[in-house]
Each structure stands twice: as structure tokens, then as C-alpha cells.
Image 1 (cartoon, rainbow, N blue to C red):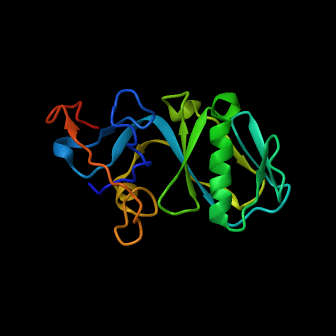
Image 2: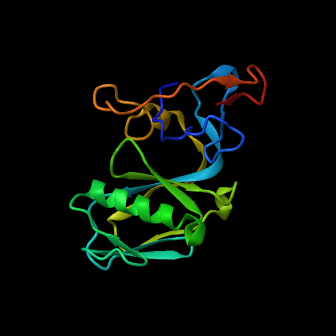
Length: 184
């Protein structure tokens, strides 16, 4: 298993109490991905949105503006990566008031990881809505993260040449050899 970003999937070392709690899939710790406690979705800021385009998650609808960030407006960044950071900040502010989600950056700076904090099933996760093809759902709500995402630096893996400020974490087995083989 590759190393993961400190603010990535397994941020909380206490597997049973954090939003990123996970169980390793496959016997004998094979490279088969992880099952997560709360559903995850990945959104991509493919290109910068134009003013007055909207995105929505849960009961919140956000409108992109050139400079106004009041209320449910998100400031359009000078790059898609800066817009992604603005989206992350706004969703996290509204975590308890409408979205029920937390947002995190991933390895690729235009990817946003959404965690549904209210549900343990992707069937109950909030809908994602966009009115253009600029901020799009890259991966629908999922309860398992496949191994290829854990190994790719676009998602969770550390790139040792460019992630100079990343602090890799070490995942340790719990209940080794049993069906409850967790990493924490």
C-alpha cells in the first residue's frame, strides 16, 4: 500500500470514530482497496466556471461570482485549482448547515474529495448538481476506494518528488488475519 496524504483518506488514526474510518478489502492485506465508513465522491474543476454558473450539493446551491463571496456565492479563482480551494472552503463552512459534507483536496489540485458525514450508505448521500460541464462529478458516491486510486498521486498517493510538504502517515493493521482487518 502506498503512503497517503496526511489530510487524505485516513486522516484520523482512530478508525472507529473518524469520517475516514476504513476497512481494508481482501484477505491477508492484499492490494484491493479500502471500504470506508462514510460515502465519498470526487468532483473535478475541469475548467474555471463563468460568472452565475451554479453547483449544488444537498440543500445548498452555490453561484460562482467574480468577486462576491457573500452568502452562497463562491469566488472564481484565477485558476481552476484556486477555484477548487474556494469550493472546498465554502462546503466546509456549510457542513452543518445544508451540505452535510466535508470537502478535502486530493493529489491533483483540481480534484475535490467530498465526504458525506450524515450517511453510511451512498444511496442516502446528497445529490450533486451542476449547470455546466466545468465543475463535474468525476466519481459518483462510493463506499469503497479502489486500489488504483490509493496508488495514483492524482488521488491519494504521495509523490515524493513534488509533495515536499506532505507528511505521509503509516497505516497499521488491527485484527490481523480476521474478517475485521482494519487499518488505522
